[in-house]
Image (cartoon, rainbow, N blue to C red; front, side, top):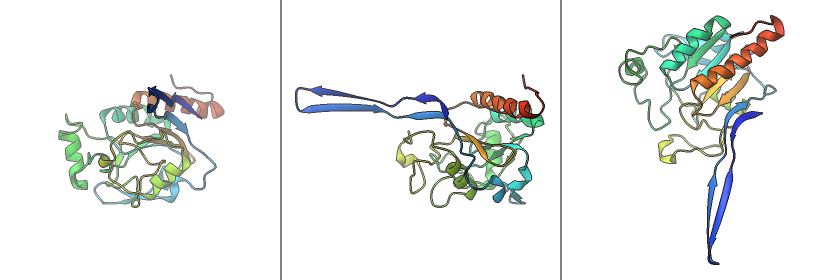
Length: 223
C-alpha cells in the first residue's frame, strides 16, 4: 500500500580474504496508506490555538478532509486556497524537535513566518496551533494517533540524531519537519507522506482521493 518505493540495496566488496566493506541504501516510502481499522478518530483530541485564546476540539472538523502539517510554507497557502471549497482544510502544528528550526515562543511564530522564514510577508491562511512535540514522551496525543494509524515512511531517520530533539527514538516517529498526514471526512487517517514529498505531489494525491470520494456520490471530478 505505497508508491515511489526507494529499494534497499546492500553491496559488499571483499578485498583479499580478510576485509569486507558493505554499503546499504535504506528504504524510504514516499506515501503510505493508513489503516482505517485503527480505533478512534481525530475527533477525540483537542489543541490550543497559537495565541492561546481557545482550545479547539478537532470534532469541529467532522466531515472535512484535513491535512496535518508541522511546518509552514507559501505552497500550503496556495493548496488551501485551491481546495477549501471541496471541504478541505490544513491544520498547522509547529514543532521545534527537528534541528531546533522553530525556536520562537508561540507569540513569536507568526512574526518569524512573516519576516524570516519563509518571509516576504507570509501569513498562513489556515489555523495554527501552539508549538508542541510530535515525537517522544511528550508528544501530542493527536500525533500519537496519526502515527499509530499509518505505517512509517522510512526505516531510518536520515539525519544525525544530534539534530533530533526527543526521546526515545521510535521507528514510527516523524522523521523530519515535512511529513504530512491526510485525514478523511470520517476523522480517520488516510495517507502519510515522506518529508521530501513536495506539496505539488501531495496536491495530486489529494485530487485523486477527492475524485474517488466524489465519484461514489456525485460522479463529479476535479480537473
